[in-house]
Length: 208
Image 1 (cartoon, rainbow, N blue to C red):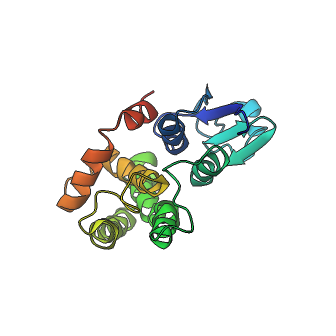
Image 2 (image 1 turned 90 degrees about the vertical axis):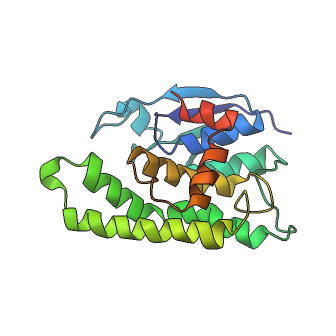
C-alpha cells in the first residue's frame, strides 16, 4: 500500500468534518492544517493557491490536491483501503450506497444551505423569510425521505454497516442540528443522528 502523506485543510463546522471523520475511522495518519475562516478571504492567499475557490476542505496527498468533501472520502477509502467505509460494486447494496453517498450534496444540500443562509448566515436585512419558509418545508421532505427510503428500519444507509454514505448524510443533519431544525425530524432520523454522533471518530472529527 502507498504510504500516505496526507494533510487535511480544516475549519470547524465545515464540510471538512466529512474527510476528517473518514481519516479517523480508517486510522490514517494525517496533518491537520487549520484554515482561518475570514469571510471573503478564507485562508488568505496561501490557501487560495491550494483551492482557488477558497472553500473548505482540501486534502493534499504528496503532490496531489483533492477538493470536494465527498470526493475526498471516496479517495481515501479507495486509495488506502480496503475499508468498510466503501461499498464495492460486487456487494448487493452498491446501488443504495451510491445513491445515499451523493444524496447529501446532490439532493439535500440546496434546501439546507438556503435555510442556513436565510436564518443564520446572511445579515438580517438580506434574509428572505419566504425563501426560508420554502427551504424549511423542503428540508422536512428530505428528513421524511431519509426516514422512509433511507433508513426504513435500518441502522445505516447501506450494506448493514457504517459507510461513506452515512458520512455524507450525517453532515447535513449536523447543519440542521446547528440551526435547531432536527427537533421535529422523524424519530428514526433522530435515533440515527444519536447513534452516529456517539462514535468516537465523529466526536474527534466534529471537535475543534
